[in-house]
Image 1 (cartoon, rainbow, N blue to C red):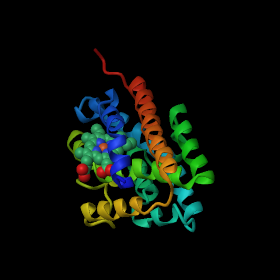
Image 2 (image 1 turned 90 degrees about the horizontal axis):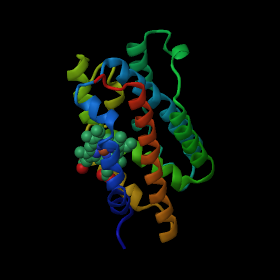
Image 3 (image 1 turned 180 degrees about the horizontal axis):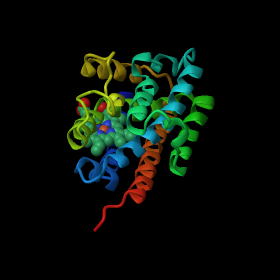
Image 4 (image 1 turned 60 degrees about the horizontal axis):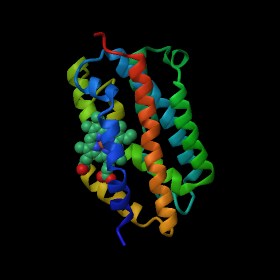
Length: 215
Ligand code: HEM
Protein backbone atom coordinates (compact mmCIF):
# COMPACT_ATOMS: atom_id res chain seq x y z
CA UNK A 1 0.00 0.00 0.00
CA UNK A 2 1.23 3.49 -0.89
CA UNK A 3 2.39 5.53 2.11
CA UNK A 4 -0.06 8.17 3.30
CA UNK A 5 2.42 11.00 2.69
CA UNK A 6 2.84 9.92 -0.94
CA UNK A 7 -0.87 9.41 -1.37
CA UNK A 8 -1.86 12.84 -0.04
CA UNK A 9 0.85 14.61 -2.07
CA UNK A 10 0.08 12.90 -5.36
CA UNK A 11 -3.70 13.02 -4.93
CA UNK A 12 -3.64 16.77 -4.32
CA UNK A 13 -1.11 17.71 -7.02
CA UNK A 14 -3.73 19.12 -9.35
CA UNK A 15 -5.24 21.27 -6.58
CA UNK A 16 -1.76 22.51 -5.69
CA UNK A 17 -1.16 23.63 -9.26
CA UNK A 18 -4.52 25.35 -9.24
CA UNK A 19 -3.81 27.51 -6.16
CA UNK A 20 -0.32 28.16 -7.35
CA UNK A 21 -1.66 29.42 -10.68
CA UNK A 22 -4.49 31.47 -9.18
CA UNK A 23 -4.68 35.02 -10.51
CA UNK A 24 -3.92 36.56 -7.12
CA UNK A 25 -0.85 34.37 -6.53
CA UNK A 26 0.41 34.91 -10.07
CA UNK A 27 -0.04 38.66 -9.77
CA UNK A 28 1.66 38.68 -6.38
CA UNK A 29 4.59 36.59 -7.60
CA UNK A 30 4.72 38.63 -10.81
CA UNK A 31 5.38 41.81 -8.77
CA UNK A 32 2.15 43.26 -10.10
CA UNK A 33 0.47 44.06 -6.80
CA UNK A 34 1.16 46.65 -4.15
CA UNK A 35 2.15 45.93 -0.58
CA UNK A 36 -1.45 46.54 0.49
CA UNK A 37 -2.52 43.33 -1.27
CA UNK A 38 0.22 41.42 0.53
CA UNK A 39 -0.89 42.93 3.85
CA UNK A 40 -4.50 41.98 3.14
CA UNK A 41 -3.39 38.42 2.43
CA UNK A 42 -1.40 38.39 5.68
CA UNK A 43 -4.55 39.47 7.52
CA UNK A 44 -6.39 36.47 6.11
CA UNK A 45 -3.61 34.16 7.24
CA UNK A 46 -4.02 35.50 10.79
CA UNK A 47 -7.60 34.21 10.87
CA UNK A 48 -6.65 30.86 9.33
CA UNK A 49 -3.74 30.25 11.71
CA UNK A 50 -5.87 31.42 14.61
CA UNK A 51 -8.13 28.45 13.86
CA UNK A 52 -5.25 26.04 13.21
CA UNK A 53 -3.38 26.96 16.36
CA UNK A 54 -6.30 27.14 18.74
CA UNK A 55 -7.18 23.71 17.30
CA UNK A 56 -3.62 22.62 18.09
CA UNK A 57 -4.09 23.59 21.72
CA UNK A 58 -7.24 21.49 21.82
CA UNK A 59 -5.59 18.50 20.12
CA UNK A 60 -2.19 18.41 21.85
CA UNK A 61 -3.09 15.26 23.80
CA UNK A 62 -5.03 13.58 21.00
CA UNK A 63 -3.53 10.21 20.02
CA UNK A 64 -4.00 10.84 16.27
CA UNK A 65 -3.42 14.58 15.81
CA UNK A 66 -1.32 15.20 18.94
CA UNK A 67 2.03 14.29 17.33
CA UNK A 68 1.45 17.05 14.73
CA UNK A 69 1.22 19.73 17.39
CA UNK A 70 4.77 21.04 17.11
CA UNK A 71 5.43 24.45 18.66
CA UNK A 72 8.27 25.09 16.19
CA UNK A 73 5.57 25.40 13.51
CA UNK A 74 3.38 27.92 15.31
CA UNK A 75 2.89 31.03 13.20
CA UNK A 76 0.62 33.31 15.21
CA UNK A 77 3.39 35.26 16.96
CA UNK A 78 5.17 35.87 13.63
CA UNK A 79 1.94 36.86 11.92
CA UNK A 80 1.24 39.37 14.66
CA UNK A 81 4.69 40.91 14.30
CA UNK A 82 4.18 41.12 10.53
CA UNK A 83 0.76 42.72 10.91
CA UNK A 84 2.07 45.25 13.37
CA UNK A 85 4.72 46.18 10.84
CA UNK A 86 2.40 46.14 7.82
CA UNK A 87 -0.66 47.75 9.39
CA UNK A 88 0.73 49.66 12.36
CA UNK A 89 0.18 49.39 16.12
CA UNK A 90 -3.62 49.58 15.85
CA UNK A 91 -3.74 46.62 13.44
CA UNK A 92 -6.09 44.53 15.57
CA UNK A 93 -9.01 46.89 15.23
CA UNK A 94 -8.44 47.44 11.52
CA UNK A 95 -8.30 43.91 10.12
CA UNK A 96 -11.19 41.82 8.86
CA UNK A 97 -11.75 38.34 7.51
CA UNK A 98 -13.19 37.90 4.04
CA UNK A 99 -16.27 35.63 3.96
CA UNK A 100 -14.15 32.95 2.24
CA UNK A 101 -11.60 33.21 5.05
CA UNK A 102 -14.30 32.79 7.69
CA UNK A 103 -15.57 29.70 5.90
CA UNK A 104 -12.04 28.26 5.77
CA UNK A 105 -11.35 29.00 9.44
CA UNK A 106 -14.69 27.53 10.47
CA UNK A 107 -13.97 24.30 8.63
CA UNK A 108 -10.60 23.99 10.38
CA UNK A 109 -12.26 24.57 13.75
CA UNK A 110 -14.93 21.99 12.94
CA UNK A 111 -12.27 19.38 12.11
CA UNK A 112 -10.26 20.26 15.22
CA UNK A 113 -13.38 19.70 17.30
CA UNK A 114 -14.67 16.51 15.75
CA UNK A 115 -12.24 14.81 13.38
CA UNK A 116 -8.49 14.68 14.12
CA UNK A 117 -7.54 13.17 10.73
CA UNK A 118 -9.39 16.00 9.00
CA UNK A 119 -7.47 18.47 11.12
CA UNK A 120 -4.23 16.79 10.01
CA UNK A 121 -5.26 17.29 6.37
CA UNK A 122 -5.55 21.05 7.02
CA UNK A 123 -2.33 21.08 9.02
CA UNK A 124 -0.45 19.40 6.18
CA UNK A 125 -1.89 21.70 3.51
CA UNK A 126 -0.78 24.85 5.29
CA UNK A 127 2.43 24.11 7.17
CA UNK A 128 4.11 21.92 4.59
CA UNK A 129 3.20 24.49 1.97
CA UNK A 130 4.69 27.29 4.07
CA UNK A 131 7.90 25.34 4.45
CA UNK A 132 8.03 24.78 0.66
CA UNK A 133 6.43 27.27 -1.72
CA UNK A 134 6.13 29.77 1.13
CA UNK A 135 9.83 30.40 0.74
CA UNK A 136 9.28 31.49 -2.86
CA UNK A 137 6.57 33.90 -1.70
CA UNK A 138 8.92 35.31 0.96
CA UNK A 139 11.70 35.83 -1.56
CA UNK A 140 9.31 37.61 -3.94
CA UNK A 141 7.89 39.80 -1.18
CA UNK A 142 11.37 40.83 -0.03
CA UNK A 143 12.29 41.85 -3.55
CA UNK A 144 8.98 43.47 -4.50
CA UNK A 145 8.45 45.59 -1.41
CA UNK A 146 11.94 45.90 0.03
CA UNK A 147 11.41 44.03 3.29
CA UNK A 148 14.55 43.12 5.19
CA UNK A 149 15.47 39.55 4.32
CA UNK A 150 13.62 37.27 6.74
CA UNK A 151 12.62 40.37 8.71
CA UNK A 152 9.53 42.39 9.54
CA UNK A 153 6.68 41.78 7.10
CA UNK A 154 7.80 38.27 6.15
CA UNK A 155 8.43 36.67 9.55
CA UNK A 156 5.49 34.37 8.90
CA UNK A 157 7.63 32.59 6.28
CA UNK A 158 10.64 32.21 8.56
CA UNK A 159 10.74 29.12 10.75
CA UNK A 160 13.45 30.16 13.21
CA UNK A 161 13.23 26.88 15.07
CA UNK A 162 13.44 24.69 11.98
CA UNK A 163 17.03 25.06 10.79
CA UNK A 164 16.78 22.15 8.36
CA UNK A 165 13.42 22.23 6.54
CA UNK A 166 14.23 19.20 4.38
CA UNK A 167 14.89 17.07 7.47
CA UNK A 168 11.80 18.47 9.13
CA UNK A 169 9.67 17.59 6.10
CA UNK A 170 11.04 14.04 6.16
CA UNK A 171 10.09 13.64 9.81
CA UNK A 172 6.70 15.20 9.07
CA UNK A 173 6.09 12.64 6.32
CA UNK A 174 7.01 9.89 8.78
CA UNK A 175 4.33 11.26 11.11
CA UNK A 176 1.82 11.23 8.26
CA UNK A 177 2.75 7.66 7.43
CA UNK A 178 2.14 6.64 11.04
CA UNK A 179 -1.40 8.07 11.19
CA UNK A 180 -3.66 5.16 12.09
CA UNK A 181 -6.71 4.43 9.96
CA UNK A 182 -8.03 2.17 7.24
CA UNK A 183 -8.16 2.91 3.54
CA UNK A 184 -11.53 4.64 3.81
CA UNK A 185 -10.25 7.01 6.49
CA UNK A 186 -7.15 7.75 4.39
CA UNK A 187 -9.35 8.59 1.41
CA UNK A 188 -11.53 10.84 3.57
CA UNK A 189 -8.43 12.69 4.76
CA UNK A 190 -7.23 13.10 1.16
CA UNK A 191 -10.64 14.52 0.25
CA UNK A 192 -10.30 16.96 3.17
CA UNK A 193 -6.91 18.06 1.86
CA UNK A 194 -8.49 18.78 -1.52
CA UNK A 195 -11.18 20.74 0.30
CA UNK A 196 -8.46 22.68 2.12
CA UNK A 197 -6.92 23.64 -1.23
CA UNK A 198 -10.36 24.65 -2.53
CA UNK A 199 -10.86 26.84 0.56
CA UNK A 200 -7.48 28.47 -0.06
CA UNK A 201 -8.42 28.99 -3.65
CA UNK A 202 -11.66 30.71 -2.65
CA UNK A 203 -9.66 33.10 -0.45
CA UNK A 204 -7.35 33.85 -3.40
CA UNK A 205 -10.36 34.45 -5.65
CA UNK A 206 -11.80 36.92 -3.15
CA UNK A 207 -8.43 38.66 -2.81
CA UNK A 208 -8.15 38.74 -6.60
CA UNK A 209 -11.52 40.47 -6.77
CA UNK A 210 -10.40 43.00 -4.16
CA UNK A 211 -7.13 43.72 -5.96
CA UNK A 212 -7.85 43.57 -9.67
CA UNK A 213 -5.09 44.73 -11.94
CA UNK A 214 -5.89 47.93 -13.68
CA UNK A 215 -6.02 47.31 -17.41
C1 HEM B 1 2.65 30.47 -5.79
C2 HEM B 1 2.66 29.83 -4.74
C3 HEM B 1 3.29 28.49 -4.52
C4 HEM B 1 4.45 27.97 -5.01
C5 HEM B 1 5.42 28.61 -5.96
C6 HEM B 1 4.57 26.63 -4.46
C7 HEM B 1 5.62 25.79 -4.69
C8 HEM B 1 5.82 24.59 -4.09
C9 HEM B 1 6.95 23.73 -4.30
C10 HEM B 1 8.11 24.04 -5.23
C11 HEM B 1 6.77 22.66 -3.53
C12 HEM B 1 7.68 21.43 -3.48
C13 HEM B 1 8.75 21.54 -2.45
C14 HEM B 1 9.48 20.24 -2.23
O1 HEM B 1 9.39 19.30 -3.05
O2 HEM B 1 10.13 20.15 -1.20
C15 HEM B 1 5.54 22.84 -2.80
C16 HEM B 1 5.04 21.94 -1.89
C17 HEM B 1 3.85 22.12 -1.23
N1 HEM B 1 2.97 23.16 -1.36
FE1 HEM B 1 3.18 24.74 -2.53
N2 HEM B 1 3.50 26.39 -3.64
C18 HEM B 1 2.70 27.50 -3.66
C19 HEM B 1 1.53 27.70 -3.00
C20 HEM B 1 0.99 26.79 -2.14
C21 HEM B 1 -0.25 27.01 -1.41
C22 HEM B 1 -1.10 28.28 -1.48
C23 HEM B 1 -0.45 25.88 -0.68
C24 HEM B 1 -1.57 25.53 0.23
C25 HEM B 1 -2.48 26.32 0.65
C26 HEM B 1 0.65 24.97 -0.94
C27 HEM B 1 0.80 23.74 -0.37
C28 HEM B 1 1.89 22.94 -0.56
C29 HEM B 1 2.10 21.68 0.14
C30 HEM B 1 1.14 21.05 1.14
C31 HEM B 1 3.31 21.18 -0.28
C32 HEM B 1 4.00 19.90 0.21
C33 HEM B 1 3.81 18.75 -0.73
C34 HEM B 1 4.47 17.50 -0.15
O3 HEM B 1 5.69 17.43 -0.20
O4 HEM B 1 3.75 16.65 0.35
N3 HEM B 1 1.49 25.56 -1.84
N4 HEM B 1 4.97 24.02 -3.17
